[in-house]
Length: 117
Image (tube, rainbow, N blue to C red; front, side, top):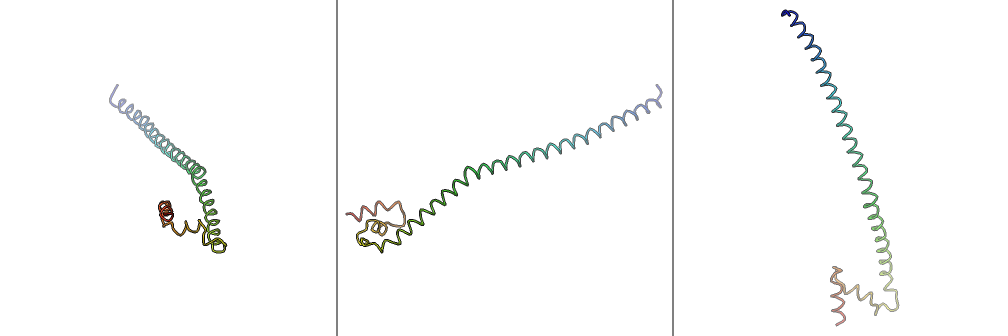
């Protein structure tokens, strides 16, 4: 084979392989980009599912409990406000307990035992 034929074969091979290589690289890049987008979409879906579960099993029960506690506190406040209207207010054990109890509820038993002595 002469050098001219070798150069033509080389040019054709380079064109074919070079073009194929470029197409392959572009294709691989597009596939990688698509895979990254799909991974991010799956991650977002997982995060959404996690947040929905968190809201359903953690936040909502806590909200219900807080609302129930608020209702109980309102009822207790109404009852406490009515103590003075009671004919037995002077000797009411609940009133005495509330008056003798410090701000820290953990100390209430100590205050009660002191008042009984």
